[in-house]
Length: 382
Image (cartoon, helix red, strand yellow):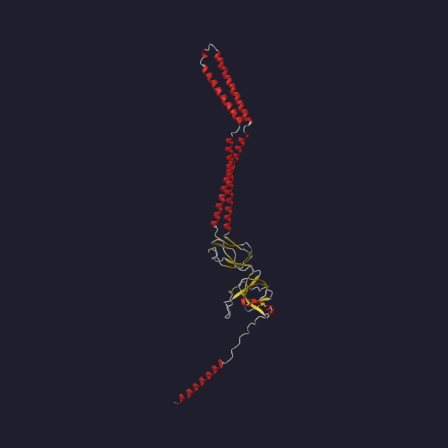
């Protein structure tokens, strides 16, 4: 009976002791951690603050394809420095190469047709020249000699017939009269033929024949012109095919650095306004800061005000800014800091600054805090 009377008071005292220890521990001041990083000091207390995003001086260029196709080669990698016009990505060009060969074959055929037409034009021109040369002296002399020869033959045949007719006793030559008469008639006809040839030689070319030959000459020349135009068209088709082939090579529009690759060999990439970019390119030799200034503070901003950018993170390094330009279009705020007190239903004026001697670790896409010396109140009041 005595044991419970002793245990209960002991347990009660232990409970009171534990309760006191717990209350004392909870009332102890919390341990302080390491001292927080002190915010950087700004030389100008009256300032306009804004959030800036680092970007290339050329802004970020989204490189797309001129035409859709399957990627066969990616010639650069992220961080590569390229010159303007350097090839970046190649698409499948087998169909384009075949079209170039077809166009070249068409040009060869057109060139052969032109040579054939030129030969026909030369023949037609020579024929016209030949007709215009008539009557030629040698043709007239030849025709005159033929007339004289035929007349001599006629005179010989006529003389033999006359001598036969004078013989009274013909005897065995009685049957020669028909033969001699035929010879005279034949010689007469030959003389008439020779006279006609002589007249033809002296007359020269008939106007109708010359007109036909000249028309053939003009037609041949026009055929040459038409086929020459076809050859020129074939050259244009070759050039067109070569341009189509070159469009399958995506080239750098400016000298810059590849910021990101979004394509791989074997992927099909479409072209057009809704197609994704193959890669991102920018000139990071000079970095800019696109700063958003709240429209409520825009009246206090002045381009000549001194500006600095504070790099976020442990370094809290400050970089002097040089004013470039103001974007003359107030737009809804898009660059968000993630702070609970941040307003997202506001519009901002975007101001572009250049970073003077930025630290090496500063890269496009990083956020910085920008402070710009505000206008003096007296100036704004006026």
